[in-house]
Length: 208
Image 1 (cartoon, rainbow, N blue to C red):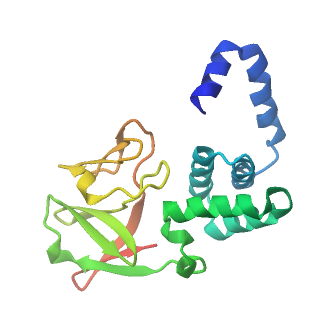
Image 2: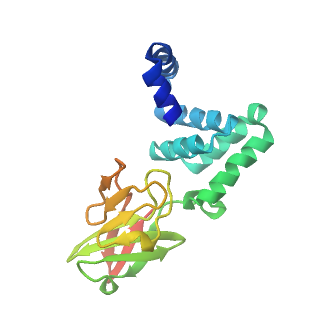
């Protein structure tokens, strides 16, 4: 919630608590993904950028795909109007989420060749670009972990310069991650997204 809402909850709990209870009860028969998509539409309607980014990320995390998000916005055209939809799409373009790029909207997940295994020093963290997506790769002998470079908070792309030792810090809201485990160690509470991987003929492949 925003600082203002947190303040009102503390200052007038008897007034605000019933409102949040109403919201919870109103959506109890909806699945999580549907609630998230409705929340996205409400944030676009009032043009709250932080809220839009927050609920967009939540919807994707809870299983919504980019085509569902776009369809939800377009289905709400009668109440949103073109200007607000364009406003939301401008934010989507600024976020540059790979899944929302036109060439990826209907792409199927597949194995992608990332790099030769012998180019990944053991005990170190490597940074690679693969098919327009940036990856952090941690190798410890025969064990590897392949992570999306995007912060799980608001899918901000975390640049290579944000890596210090084994600690990766998102420049936007300062979530910190231990790349050896992927776990969030400060500020936030969600780990880096990890991709399934395999080694074939000395080549590292990742699946998305």
